[in-house]
Amino acid sequence: MVDEERFTNTPDTVQFEHSTCQREASHFGGKLRLNMTRILEGVGAVAGIVGAGLIASNTQLSSYGWIGFSISSVTLAAFAIYIRAWWMLAMQICFSITNAVGLWRWLIEPAIAATIQ
Image (cartoon, rainbow, N blue to C red; front, side, top):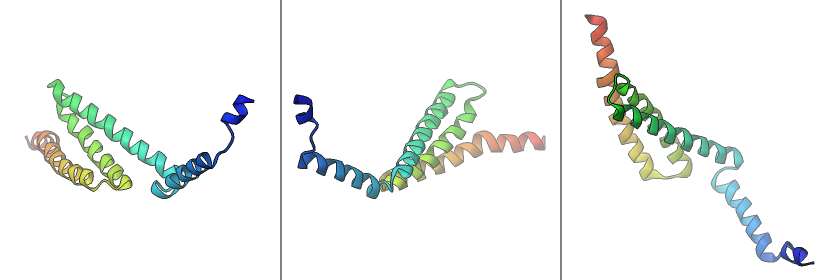
């Protein structure tokens, strides 16, 4: 009997469940979009961590960290758009520019120089 009372639908519970579903559907565009945001956030975080680890390792593979940073910036920019975090988007655009410079200086330019010689 105590369990039945605890799990009865009170107006507060029904309202909470309704507002949660409504918020999920309207703010995130439904479950598909919510899953996409989690995927973008996760890929962006992991790629950034891998990129930072590669650059910090100071080895022959360090230059490939710029690829991780670039993937991170692009996916986190898309994530920022989905969650409407405009300052985060601005930061990711700036990071993308610095990542393009890093890619050019540490991967593309040396590859071009190696083919010329």
